[in-house]
Image (cartoon, rainbow, N blue to C red; front, side, top):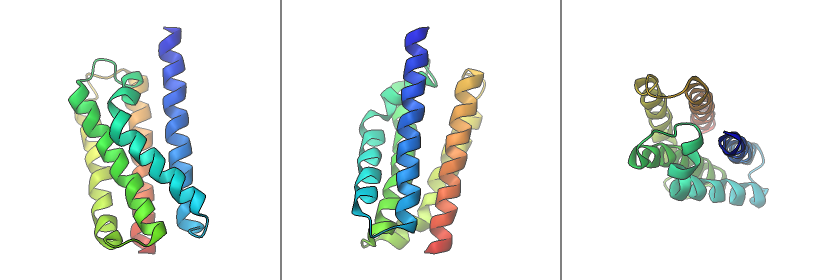
Length: 140
């Protein structure tokens, strides 16, 4: 049980650092370190999302958890594209709310299979990603 609690704290810390760097990169795009951190966390979610989300949803299928990590990674990478003003940023920004909404829908559909803590944590994080997506839309 203690190991699960430690993994949950680490998972929350990973999201918090990634989210803060992605959000701040929008307001301080000249700070390249924020863009690099957001990019790194996007890649972490893309490759290790299935493992990170085990602390929220231990019974979850690895493929399902990979899809959740993919959705998180897409919102973070959209933030990177927007802050760095890379090509295709406007296209990714317009799709980003769909990814965040998809994450919310997926969590709501699976709420009966998750623990209450995991459901709440996923919902909070998905809501924050949706807010970031809307901010990206407004700025874009």
